[in-house]
Image (cartoon, rainbow, N blue to C red; front, side, top):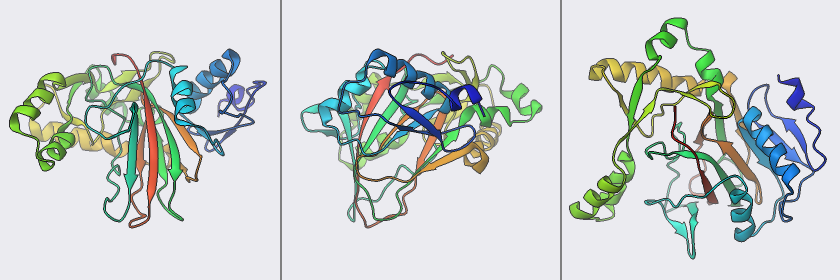
Amino acid sequence: MNQLVRHLKVSTFSLTPLTPSIGAEVGDIDLTQPPDAETIEGLRAALRDWKVLFFRDQDITTEQHLAFARRFGDLEVHPFAPSKPDYPEVLAITHDKDSRGRENTWHSDVTWREVPSLGSILRCLESPPVGGDTLFADMYAAYDGLSDAVKSRIEGAVAVHDFAHFRKALRKKGKSDAEIEAFDRAYPMVEHPVVRTHPETGRKAIYVNAAFTQHILGLEPEESATLLAHLYAQAAIPEYQCRFRWAVNAIAFWDNRSSQHYAASDYWPAVRRMERVTIIGDRPV
């Protein structure tokens, strides 16, 4: 464990790690009050080291949610998923008896974008009485745990990403071929490195995921699929993970460049109602 971060002294908050490498709960902080510059820099440092930060009992407004996220960068508008009325940057994620949870695939958010996100900040408005946890995986540890042979094989490799499952959902909603073609032009398939170097830490992380990655360039389809399946499976190793139990007014802030996440969809027909704000990142290298 990084002892320096474990004992990080920031006057406005405390950190309690959930595991040796990923996940830390932030205490002694009130996000209804605008954090000062020292606090923001401390949170940036904590995010770099712990990949996902958790906050509890934060009864914030939508405006405060947005204002907090903007301290870390510009915000994106999701072109496919539903947003909160009058707040285009706020993604509304609700599941109930009429809508089963479907985020139960290991992924990093919006890797189908040319410039994917830095991070996401998810707030819980209503949680199931039990279930609906989110799991997070340390993709640095996932890379470090690969054999030397696999590391050598994927060095410099590039993969294609696409919003394929959103396209299927658009068709189910009755979007015309012309409308879908317009989305294809606006968000064409993109190429990202299979192993990404984090722009702030310089550490390497696996950067392919089962939700959005299509294939690895230069490989035969079967060879690509086999290699990708092996890389995807690394996120499912418990030693690389932490798990968060949601409650109303809990918040998770994760780094999409160094982690992946999986929303357990084990709570149907109970209600799970969340709002997410996503921070624009940089082009992966």
